[in-house]
Length: 287
Ligand SMILES: Nc1ncnc2c1ncn2[C@@H]1O[C@H](COP(=O)(O)OP(=O)(O)O)[C@@H](O)[C@H]1O
Ligand SMILES: [Mg+2]
Image (cartoon, rainbow, N blue to C red):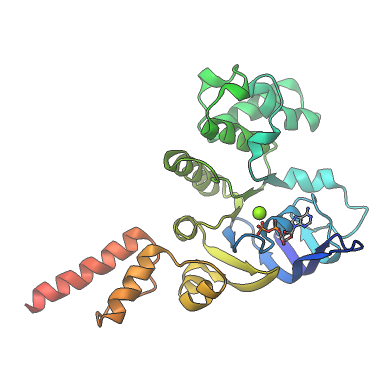
């Protein structure tokens, strides 16, 4: 079942001297099995929005309904929501605390009251899914590299086996290799298990490669949404929201501005390459 957000607003320090409007009348819907991205510049409300999806933040105004469970209702049990939606916070490795990798990843399923064999089986599946090698399983999470720690933290959420995985800037602070590995694993989880994925990022290139649909936040408001291609075609608007269209679409737009007959709705490197080759072949045939 989908995630439905209706007229959601959220103000930090509502009753204090300096209230901050983080979300302002946001409505959106995420269907089962979709891979969506939430983008927007720093402070646009991305983290506040997605923390509503597993009940970490309760709606102040408006509604959030997950799998039919209405989070605006006090009696909705958060454990039921968290079984369905796993949230990987920003820099999740800061919250690691167990003595071994296996104990860390087993913590969530153990708390669900599952038997030991099931806890072990889920932990193993989760670690393998994110590519943490067996040789590391008995080690302390704190001895691992940054990328490995990040993957252990993601595995500890996956071990709860949620249908929906929400990730808040999962590649922040990692080197290019670590970033690629994590994104590749997330893509696989989506493809193989039809997991719903909500990816928060400000990397427009990653979004172009991975997400089917995009939601753009700007100063707490939802200012654009649609398929990635539709939203990315709106260069001027994206710039106004502090976002840079992917470099490849900027190159194509540049070629077009110079009078070349190229399509500017190509958004990945591969698509842009094919578009430029098409143009090149056309020229050679005419010559
Ligand atoms: N705990 C908090 N207390 C007060 N203001 C906050 C808090 N968390 C976020 N904000 C403010 O709310 C707005 C939205 O923040 P956030 O949801 O973190 O945006 P993003 O994730 O897009 O950077 C920003 O203006 C931010 O400064
Ligand atoms: Mg954030």
